Image 1 (cartoon, helix red, strand yellow):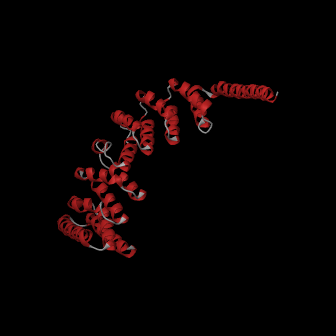
Image 2: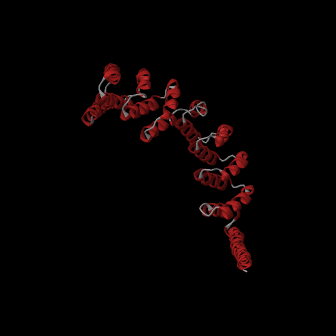
Image 3: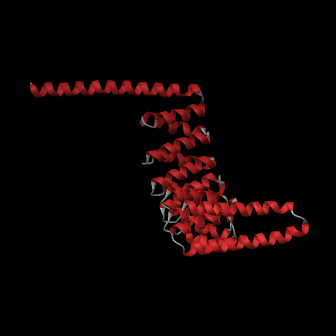
Length: 295
């Protein structure tokens, strides 16, 4: 496989070099040479299409790689089919090729391919989607938020966050009730990146989520929003959750200043003292009960 890709690289490099050298030719020779180079390029693309369509796994890998370096709209159909190939490398190169071509017709298929189980292939698919114009990408991604596959939903949410698309806020907020904690986490992260204070209440409610990752994400999102209405629920986290306390304290410090955490520490000391006092009283009651039983 490596040898095949190296040969394709050499061929593509030679073709690119010929295209660059066109400027060195006289006007009358340049057009003739350009037509010949375009013909050779088209023939190479046709060969790669044929190889991707019906070759063995190593041939398909080399073909998909080659088509990613020679983007051509006529390859969209075979590349879309290659998104379902059994080989990880073929799917990865096919997605990269579709991103380079940028044909809107392929966006729907790339978004559906977000169901991908291999994280490295999925990364290339998301990169390919990000290469499309923002409006096209957002429309295609938003339509996938209600698809049953959890990988598609969580990666679609992540992409909307990367695109900082404010009009997606309501749809992302709806995902905060998704049954899958990974989807809820990506929705929280996306809302943090977009930074719309309209979802403050929904993010505060996420502080009580059953997933520790979602709760952590909500703390960071509230910290980023910079709204003082988040202070009280963050203090509650400090008092009730020892594991998340450092993150909540940092959020409070950023929202209200360096000295703002001292009252929280004082409250913690008071709680500890109250716990200790109550413990002594409970033990005292226990002692009295024990004496009565003995006597």
